[in-house]
Image 1: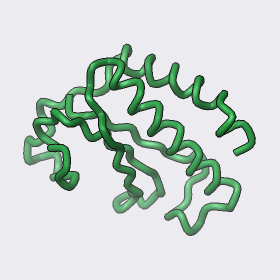
Image 2 (image 1 turned 180 degrees about the horizontal axis):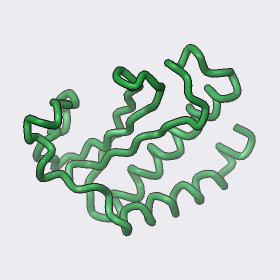
Image 3 (image 1 turned 60 degrees about the vertical axis):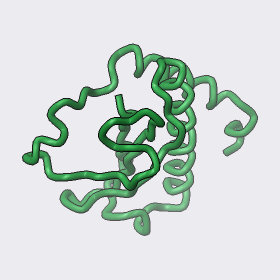
Length: 125
C-alpha cells in the first residue's frame, strides 16, 4: 500500500473554504488534524510506513469543498515519498491496482481518532 487516502466532506456544502463559517472552518481544521494523526499512527501500526500526510483542498468538478488526506509512505511504489502527489485521470489505468483501506485499517484509524479526541489538546478545541 502506498500510504492510504481519506476524503473529508463537510455536511454543509460550500464552494470553497472561504464560504465556511468560522465555527465550521475550525471544525474542519480540527477534523483534518485528528484524522491525519490517527491515519499516521493507525496505518503505521498496521505495517504501512506513513511518514507524512499531504492535505489537499479539492472541489474542482463538483464544485463542493472537501479535503483529501494522502498518506505518504516511505516504501510507496506509485506515489513515491518525497515526490509530488500525482493524480492522473482514471481512464489512464494508473489506479487499477490500488486497493481501498480495509476493515482492519479503518478499525485502527477509528480507534486512534477516539483516543486522540480524548486528549487534552482537543478537549477545548
